[in-house]
Image (cartoon, rainbow, N blue to C red; front, side):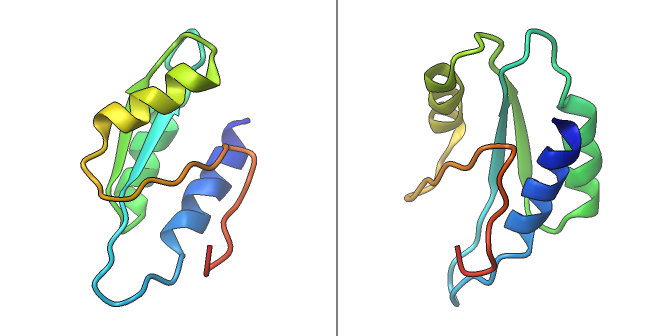
Length: 90
């Protein structure tokens, strides 16, 4: 589902943020091997928002989301799956 992940990340980077708010993205890859690492690295060079990668190979959505929470320093966190896209006002 790597093409969908690229669409997801691009949609997040294109969101219209209110003044004073910034976003960063944490990708939790829960495949057995770090299959999304190269794509995330390439997109982190392409997009203007910070993107961080975490490999959480347990194939369990709860563990993947907890890996994101552990890596986050934000006041607010939202989750989106790699087969979804965000609207500009999401």
